[in-house]
Image 1 (cartoon, rainbow, N blue to C red):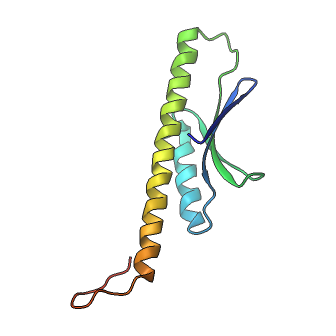
Image 2 (image 1 turned 135 degrees about the vertical axis):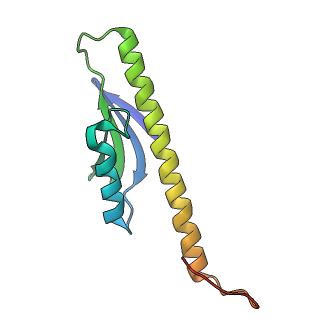
Amino acid sequence: MKKLSSEGSDLRGNQHPVPTSDRERTFEQLLTANLFGAHTGGATLAIDAEFDEIVLCTDIGNHGWTSELILARLQRFIDAALGWRERFADLQTAEEASTHSRNAAPATGGPFLAV
């Protein structure tokens, strides 16, 4: 995780800069993941407009929870943050490979396909 901060009872993990291309697909994936917290460990993916970053955030405030429940929520948040960090790293690697293949000259003697 690039950055993890706690302000009061909120946790925030900066995940990735907001992409400059294919934004619609990225935003669709974020919204889909947020549905009922299904792919976020109960946390929320959001865009921090001030820093132009995608962030994962959650509340672990004093709700009368046991220490075991707080630790479980923290672990789910960490697992989700690491999972999303990996997804964004894979996405960035794929984008870089695609850009490289579009800019590369075709090899002689064989077919050339840019994806």
